[in-house]
Amino acid sequence: MGALELLAGLYPEGELDVRLLLVHEYRDISYMDPSATVDDARLKEIEEQMGIPPDKARRGFESLVQKIPLKLGWQVPTPPAAR
Image 1: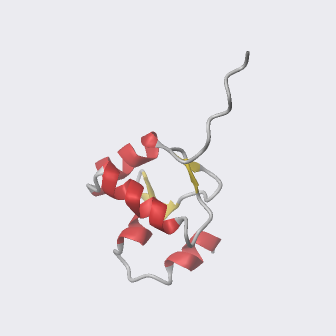
Image 2: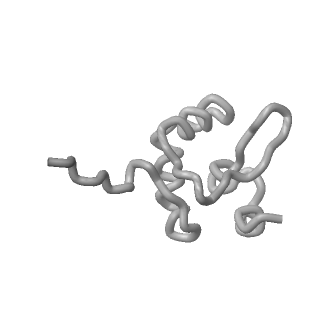
């Protein structure tokens, strides 16, 4: 059992926080890799698979990072351009 699975057990099943952590692949459902960066592609997958609009998912992930150390692509600072 992974760390995200244990943390997800703290929430009622079906709650937005838990749904955002799930990854649907083929017929399997698992928890996302916590070291992976949540980006626009992930937000699009969530919208297609679960019907959660990207803005709502983004806000949900922003709330989750207060409890779980996730990397959010829209919060990662971009390195300065090379001169």
